[in-house]
Image (tube, rainbow, N blue to C red; front, side, top):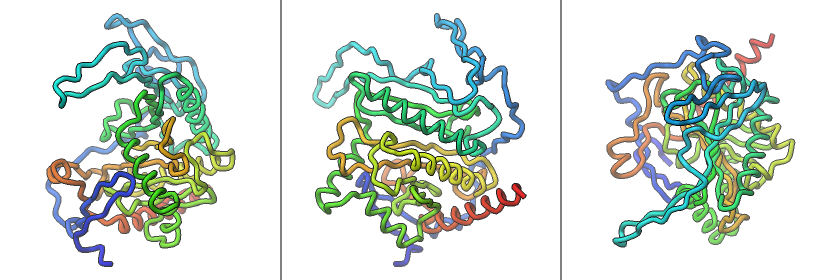
Length: 356
């Protein structure tokens, strides 16, 4: 098939389509040029950072009580001081006229600091430190899912000012909700339907095909695969999948978690090497809801959505046709995967060179 000609691809997890227009990748750029981040200029400890150990996190303003971080030396989790959700929600919702539907939403928002060191990113952590983050994710899922009324836990990270991250200290977020979010519900429906129609797991089939074809594979190890989805919307979007069918991070054994730490670090280094800058992105895990339609159909996976298009300062804007019609991308997923594979190889050579 000629992927160079404009064509559409269907996302089997959501049922939505994306327009692929490789011919547009050569067009001249006269749009906005972003600034890059310089982590080298950051201090190891910032007395003004509300995430650093020992610092005051919340002042008396707006009637709030003071909250101070402990002098933590590993992973640190706390309830978000300005949460988007509240657990104690006792109110009714007006649902008239018939088009005016709404519901109250109960939930819990937490922040997870990966490390006490302000000047580094997750890509700078060793495998043992990343494994500590993974174990904390697992603990948080178990704890939050045991709370009455909580049916889903979303783990995510917004990395970089381009993605709206308000603090460079390496951290992520954990939101637990009473409702199953729309994107998760859609993935649940389509994975279940695929199992009913084909007798097999959708993402198991995707992974098996991609490992054989190879053209969209970026990284793999004994337990995990990183690939650019055939249906990817963002230029250098990737998906991280366990090779063994698992529904949640809580299903992983110690070997799988150790292997996850390794490939997570490799992926971050691959991204940072692509344009020689800390790659901004939004990423997150999709785990099975508390009550999936069919647990056999749900395959654990993580999405990585970097916005950069062709350099460290030029990003993809989801506007115009994307907002009014459907998603559109300027480079094929196959081309993106090839460039990420090269970046992974170069980053590995750099690490080997530094270790000598």
